[in-house]
Amino acid sequence: MIFVFRVISNEVEDFFRDVEIKSTQTFYQLHNAIQYDADWDSSQLATFYLTDENWEPAQEISLIDISGDALLMDKIKLDKFFGKKSQKLIYTYDVMADRSLFIELWKVKDEDEDSRQKYPVISNGNGDFPSQVMLQKKQSRQNIFDESDFDVEESLEEGFEDN
Image 1 (cartoon, rainbow, N blue to C red):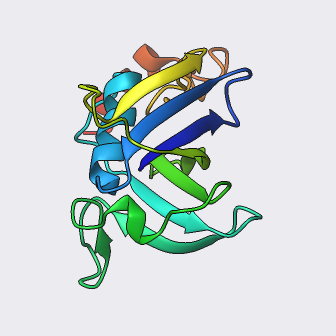
Image 2: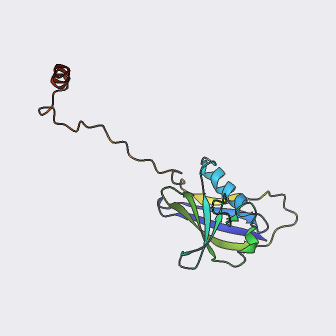
Image 3: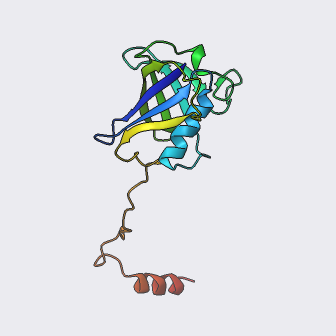
């Protein structure tokens, strides 16, 4: 079977991607397909959360095992958790800022035995991915002292006079 996952973002209006992937492939392969299409740095931490129909996280599937008992992306095949249309998944790609993509099993279709298509593949899409890591706006340095209240040269001179 081929799963067609619809990927959307709550940050970028009109953004979506459809990822086609074999049901026997892993969450890690889905992760890599998203990372590659988004042109993101694959060294950043990411994790999937299986969810209920209201997008409430239920089970985490991690890139790395921090806790010692996590389900790992490269070990878990998609068909272990998916099989029917409308199942949902959250993909947290910016762990530090808790930013995510929302993924839904859009279609399930039979694999064409004669097809030479390699999976996973992006089959449809619109718009640009959000940036991978939320960058803080650079704030201009401001002198915490009002110039009329503080004279650097005068302060230095006074400091030397005390010695």
